[in-house]
Image (tube, rainbow, N blue to C red; front, side, top):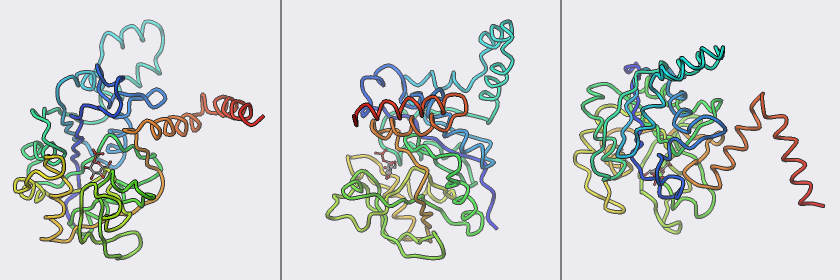
Length: 293
Ligand code: G1P
């Protein structure tokens, strides 16, 4: 049995250019899905698997992210005065759910570089990487399955999902060999291939579990697509040296770095809410029937 994974790294230094203008003066990680910022879903997903230490790789203009996971004594005081004890408890829970650390990337040199910045903090143990553009439904169990695989095998695991048509050119793409169940072995990886050249339609989703060996390959990884140090290129190199597994899954992932899927995620999560779900459903049905008539 390999070591248990207690640490996670969340790269959050991106400029959010796909979401301008709303990301001009606020981090894309703080965009709400109903009433929770996207990054809170990601942190809660990590915490739900037993991860207790989270390093967020940030950059300029990301202060509201740190404030969100900090105590706010002033807010708690006013909520207490107003008798809003449920809200006080929720504000404290957000601040206390994990040990969250922040480190700046310095210069935007790509996802691989952002992860390499975490080397000293992570140290000699294994760790998970969660990308904030990919939000997982709490029931999807993807990260938990990947962690179980890592703990059983001691080898790195990457989340993979089939995507339709030309979509593969927006992702890391994996050529794989099937193993047991939904587990595959990665044979090759290419970052954002043209659809015609993609070796498969299996896309890398933003969940990874690594041993510390990934830092050695990242240190050797040359700039790739877009002149950036690509995490995909480092994993490809790792897969040439030792087994790297792919954890394939189908449901429960939203790409909130994309406007259309961001809206879809918002609707799905709102429909599931006990407080507003039923009334929201009624609104949607009425609204759509107006289009049909
Ligand atoms: C990154 C990775 C890519 C991966 C994707 C998942 O790309 O580089 O390999 O498939 O996340 O969301 P980005 O979307 O940051 O351009």
